Each structure stands twice: as C-alpha cells, then as structure tokens.
Length: 152
Image (cartoon, rainbow, N blue to C red; front, top):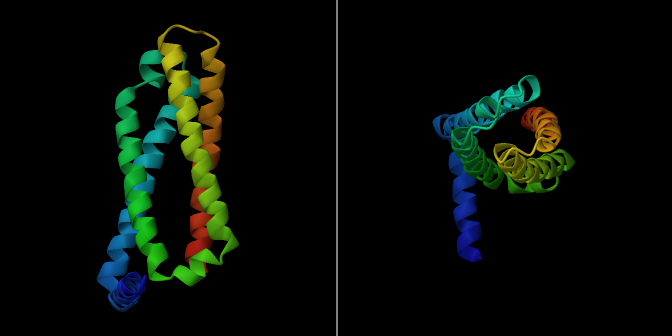
C-alpha cells in the first residue's frame, strides 16, 4: 500500500503540474462521452422513432458504445486518482457513479430486449423503447453530474 500511495502521489503531482497531461485525460474522457453517448443516443433515437429492427437493433453500435465507455472509465479513474480525497468525499461524484451503474444495468436489459426483438417478440419493443428513454435520461444525468463535478 505504501508503493500504491507513492504512485498515486506522483500521478497527482504530474496531473496537476502538467497542463498537457490533465488536458489529454480530460479530452479522452469527453471523447468517450461523445463516442459512447453519441452512438447510444443514435440507437435510442432509432428505437423511439422507428419500428424497424434493422435500424434500432444494430450490434455494431454496442462495440462503439463499449469503446466510449472504456475511455470514460479509464480516464475517469485517472482523474479520480489525481484528487482522490475530493472525489471520494463528493456526493455529486457518488451520484454520478450510481447513475453510471444504472446505465450499465440498463445496457444489459437493452441487449436482452434487442435479442427478443430480433427473435420477433413484438412485446419486446416496449422494453426496448423503455431502455432507450432510460438510456437518454441516464447519459444526460451523468453529463450533468460530470459538469457539476468539474466545476467544483
């Protein structure tokens, strides 16, 4: 644990002292939001406005959303480690983490709904549309929490 504390202290100093490092990590975080959230929002829009499984249920979309989420998680951990005390004591941070967990859970339910839609289960459209509404609300809630967190 002494080594971990030493590495975190070095990272925190580097992150706070080097504008290029902190800007790069922030950029990667925002790029992940744009990539993952943008692709998810497009899929959500298709599910809410269309009854065509080919448009609303595209497995290629998930690869892009997961790539975006990967960027968000890695860059978010780096940001958190740069100022651990501030993040761990922030209620906004924990709200954002809760919303993120809900987003992951919603994604799992969406995958199951998409599979049912592809099998021709017409009742699954309602669940797919519900997960789309939840997805949009969660992405915007996470974005709001991140904006508040970044401003404090």
